[in-house]
Image 1 (spheres, rainbow, N blue to C red):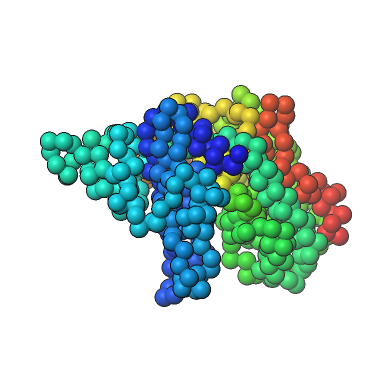
Image 2 (cartoon, one colour):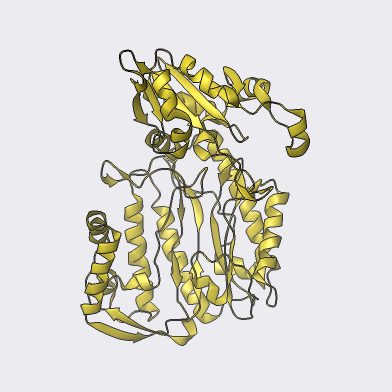
Length: 473
């Protein structure tokens, strides 16, 4: 049974009776006759596995059983001469489990017929695709008898929350694809560690690594590669990848392959000189300790919020030990001083998207891990070279309260109030140890939650100091 067949079956169990409307991705043009490489909309792919653009799907569900109808590009010899072979309607039925397939030009004429007897319509009614294809069409497909074609009896239900919940739990076929993406990614990182040398440019390392991804079956990158040497390692989403690599610096690489539409997400940090300096090793081992603790927490019943709090506690102890903050662990946490060096979350869901579908909360409470969920665990410490002296505010602050206030007041008013509070607070100046400036370390792995223990899908990527130095020296 294909992954999408399983997904449709699970969705049908939830909906029981109704119709699902889905629209695939479209070609996005860069300029004139040049387009960006096409990648299918993840939700559309999840329920159909259809790889081509300009497609629509109607899933009719009766008594918890789904029936897939696909609207696809016609076979066209002239167009295929230019753009490549199309699967066509026959292929949609034979290879993609569609009950019936139609030309995508038939969507408007066929939808009213397919929806006969259905009033419960599941769709993304906030999307531009709904406005483009469905809003007016539903008024004729499911009309009021007395009031004419401008009104509809259709009861619209939000589809995306249902898909997001399903995508959180990966079944066996999805885990196999994720594992393959992770294995390819590991190979690329290992080759990058062997290849990178002072005097090279960041883009040369990126090209070598990405070549390994493609040679081993990756269709594309999971996201633009971050290859950040020296001071650039302290820039979280650095992707310029143009600068020269220098002796005695670290190189932070956050890069991954995508395989079968599923993405890995891995970060490794290693010394360009072949061996960590004392200062680099000190920071690295502290981040590694926090990461190992985080991985151990990916078990049923625990939450990402708990892991993040544990990571903050661990890294705050590290910041005190490294003399990066002026006060003790409790103050470093309560006054958010750690945020100067660790300013992002500890992890995120992983799957068809590198930041995958699914919220971290359920019914207003932190979501508990279940077997089949996949998350990253990625703590870091970034000692920005632009801040040799930091004025830390002596003001207790709480992230949950800050978030709630931003929801209530809106970002603009809330952040203005935060700025005013910080300006009025007393501060303490603290000089950052010079040998630590410009060192950014992040370590990231992809972790599968199981009923037994966490499974590190990227564990073969060298991570200990000894393993890394054996490759780089």
